[in-house]
Image 1 (cartoon, rainbow, N blue to C red):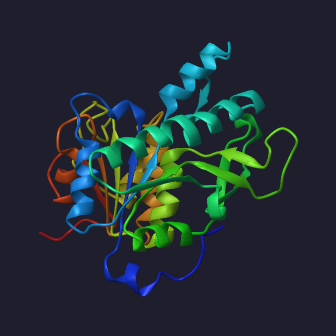
Image 2 (image 1 turned 90 degrees about the vertical axis):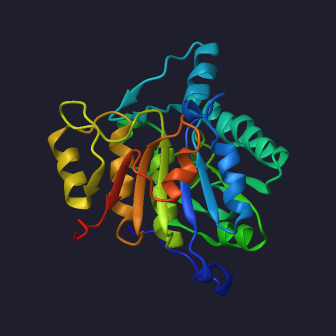
Length: 278
C-alpha cells in the first residue's frame, strides 16, 4: 500500500525537503553531522531527520538479559524488546539529539511516528515479531514543523494499523531506513541521504560503487551482494526514487559528510532512477 496524506502546503512546495537518516554508530567525536544539520537550517534548507539508535537499544537489551537478534538486517522484536526499543528511541536517543542540535543554535523538535499518526504499520513477518511494515504515512506533522522553522527529528516507531494489542500497546518498531524512505516518498523530498558507518554500497569484491540506478540496486538485492543493514537502505532508495530526485549512501563518520552529499560530492554511493547521459 502506498503512503498517503495531505497535499503539501504552499510554503513547503517552494522548497523541497531533504530526508536524512542518521544512525547512532555515525555520531562520534570526529563527525560533524549535527553541526551540518544546523548549517543547512541556517542557509534555508529543509532537513527532516529520521534517527536510529540500534547500538543503544542493544546495550539496554543486554542489561535486561536479552540478546539482540537480526534477520535480513532487521531487528527481531518481541514484547520485552519492543518496550526497550520504544523507550530508547522516543526517549533517550531522540531527546539527546534534540538537545544537542538546540545547543548548537539550531531549532529542532523531536517526535515519533506515533505522533499525529505519522506512521501506520502492520506486522508483515511474524518471524520478526513486532516489527512494522509501513502501510500509511501522514506527513502533515512534519510539514507543519518545517513551516514553523524547526528541524523535525523523528524516532522510527509507528502505530499498529490493526489496533492496540495487549503485548504491543498499539506500537511497532520500524526500521529507521525504511521509515526514512517512506517519509521521503510522502514528502516528495528533493533527496534522501543515509549517513551510515561504511563507505557506501560495495560490490562482490568489497569495492565501493560510486553510482547506481534503481535497476542496479534491485540487481544487488536479488543477487545477495547487498546484505545485512544495506538491504533496507537499498530497498528504501528504490521505493523513494519513484518521486525523490536522488539518494545518497555515505559514511557519516567523516567531517562534512552531510554537507558534501548536499553539494553532490563524490563520496559514498549516489543513486538515481536511471543513468545520466554524459
